Amino acid sequence: MTHRPQSPSPVVPSAGATPCQAVLLADPGGGRLVYADVVMRGAGRSWWAEQRAPGAPPRVWRDWVVTAALVVTALVEGALRDDVPWRVLSTVMAVGLAVAVLWRRTHPLAVVVIAFGSAIVVQVAALLAGAGPVGLYTAALVLLLPYALFRWGAGSEMIPGLGLMLVAAVLGTAADFNGLGEAVAGFLVLLFPAALGASVRYRDYARRREIEQVTLHERGQLARELHDVVAHHVSAIAVRAQAGQLLAATDPQAAVDALRVVETEASRALAEMRAMVGVLRAGLPGDLAPQPAVDDIARMRRDRPAPRITVELGPGLEQLPPAVGSALYRIAQESVTNAVRHGQGASQVDVLVRREAENVRVTVRDDGALAPGAWGASGYGLVGMSERAALLGGAFRAGPQPDGGWLVDAVIPADGRRR
Image (cartoon, rainbow, N blue to C red):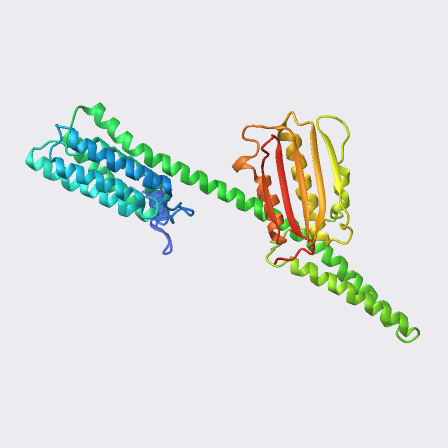
């Protein structure tokens, strides 16, 4: 008995399958195409939804100086060049563009529309009239606009702005075509500032994310320290309260003393809890090791060379809240570590902690030469120290000294409360 070969049964996708899943079931090759299309569409939507980059600097005196110089240059070029078609129009466009550049960071798309939209209109009119390329060399300042658009603009501004710039570039190339190589070079010159602006934008974004991670880590560490301190006070309150209950019937005075201790411990616990306002633990596990205090800074003292570390602790530091003592220790520790690691040729590191009325100041100085790139804007240790001081209502500054070396100076309220 022979059997006829049966054709493979078609694969029927389920009712809830997406178009991409359906094609993957029926035709893996076609599925790859659909998947690529879905990925590209998702990337496009993500780019379109990109928000404006934060921190766009306002106009400063340098912008006004540059604009004034460009206006003068445009007027001089328009008056002296004898090969400029439509001289008055070209000069007015260059002057207007120089003024519009002032708003390139705050209104990037509007400035691109004004600059490249005007260029498109004029180039079309020039092509129809056979007048050749219209414009001054000063108009090359339009290269500032692609950078500003991709550095500061939103995704919904970058995409139409890029399309407008490409249309203007095509028309400009058609009006003055000198070969394929020069045309390609012109497009690359136009797109390079845009690529540079995008790279700077996302590098700044990555740095902001790293700073956020450092800040969250520092907040979590400080929250753990404060949590342990408050837990200690609460435990003492519970023990004293139990003792007071047991002694109330036989020794009323001992019970009263226990209540006084409970009141003192409760006051200290409340003070520490106020310092925790705004600090989130984010579910981080507690650290069982004892939290460092001001007295522990003295252990950083080191007499051996390269470098020698001296520590001076002033009077009035005995009754500082644990949160303040821990913050002072962490700032001193980070400063000394960085001085030892990055202070080239440092022979001396001085740590000074002193009480100043209602504040406590910690100062760390070294006499080494600053290693290139060791500190500067990329130093996340500075971010952590600044965050610690700010959480307790203090202030922080760090920088090179006029006579060489590095200075770290932090001031924290002695009670650890914001004012």
